[in-house]
Length: 309
Image: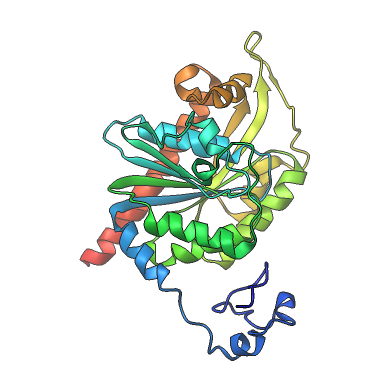
């Protein structure tokens, strides 16, 4: 069987058979004709599996090193503080699965009774093992996570994604297309070099019709624990996330300031929210989490009203 090109647009894409990566592909003519655009049966299977998952939130960044996995972990921790809320955290960063370390998991998949985690990191014999896979194999792993994991009754499924707008992102959006995703939370840092990639991620969301819940500006200044003065470690030379959100008409969910204890908590596999309850960063996290919950509840309420009418 011929291997699918690494950056194949997919048979159901408008660019099927027409993209640069399609040149030389044995299926080019078939895809261009539209005859090969048959939906993956896994989409319906995943839709059935996801009926027990109330809210689905993707965490995206487009840029590496902005603290996306840290945010995903603490979003899950914050949601799970309510013992009556069942939360699952799915790590689809296949080549850099940092969630098991951040969540303090070694061989276990449950942080608490109401907080479960799934990651390719659990399948490696050592945390230092490299995952050297082409796109199709990564896509197959994501399909397996969504279709074959017994998620059970879950209130929130948080999906931590790798940087970029490529294979993993297309796969998770495609496989969840029929299962109703609440939306994406976009994580950035204040400087323009980060915002450039984040704009691409927002463009990706709009092209694949993925709702954007809002933007989080991470590492947004440093508040001295002694004098309480704020310093800009990463100066927002073009106005930071606030200016970008205004230009793109998106909500800014909040700003999380730098706190050295966040990194320490992640290295120890502990919840920063519990370790440093009085930190300004904790207050920022809690405010952002509340806004995400409000978005999800409002979206659910609107859909229920449409169904009833």
